[in-house]
Length: 385
Image 1 (cartoon, rainbow, N blue to C red):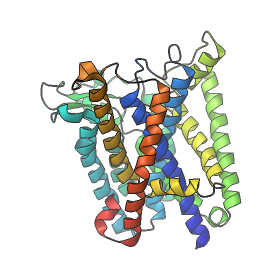
Image 2 (image 1 turned 30 degrees about the vertical axis):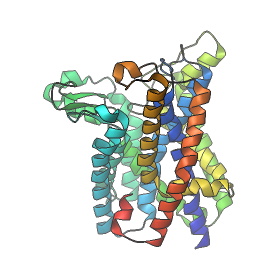
Image 3 (image 1 turned 120 degrees about the vertical axis):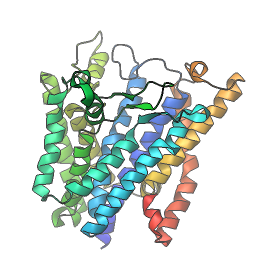
């Protein structure tokens, strides 16, 4: 039992690390003065590129760990289905209400919505409620088919599908839905569902894998296995990306300097996540997870606190970042922000990193308090936070 708790704890540490890194990306969104695409190899800086690229780990590992957590919860099939469906719906509701308000601030429009990561996470959970009923081999085959094969669909233009254009944007191609902003009910799909559903299903299988006796009972073997799997995925990524025939719709190219060429090689498509993107991010994540198996307190304990309350942390960190940026803008400019005036406001990366550190530190006490509440109590609603 102690070894099992250590295994679950290591996944909590990984989840906590993902939450901390995610906050860096969101602080950059609100506080950075950069007016360039941070992953545009031809124009970005190495520091800005690295700051953005490392946060690419977050969304895939959100999905993987959510799927793994569903398996490791060991609910009976009926309870599992009910939980996945209701939690998935709850995440979608949060995306369209509280999270939307955090991103858009006081000028929020309630007729135009962006479908972001919680939307994809929620729908993927609802899909997993059905997929979990498949035999494990069939579930893995479907997940791999979605992850490996979806780039074959990249050339399908939604506008060529007539009345099905909106459905295709929901499934595979980012783009607008419904009316334009200010002209009626509409929105923008930033996180199409394919292959995110496959990534969560793969996470469910990952949960089954780490619970096999060979891995569950031997932390050192578990670490070695994660490291080998991560290295294999990265080697496959490098090989596929080098040939550049399949795996990502954006080809890489030789740039003016070696550093920019490397950035071009690593400039991968996230919306939707390409095969190359998922190989690189999941591969790096497995290497990180292998290292976390050896991480000891107090750092592990701090990360574990964040990892035990991921949704609470997510909503709270967005509120703190958005509110601090609003106050910072008003104090520094003496004006109330709108879309035009806020464009270009912000600071260079050192300030962004300082704000990130302060935000993460500030969240520790409320997260530790709420983790304690969840440990002491068994109220049903706590499972949704």
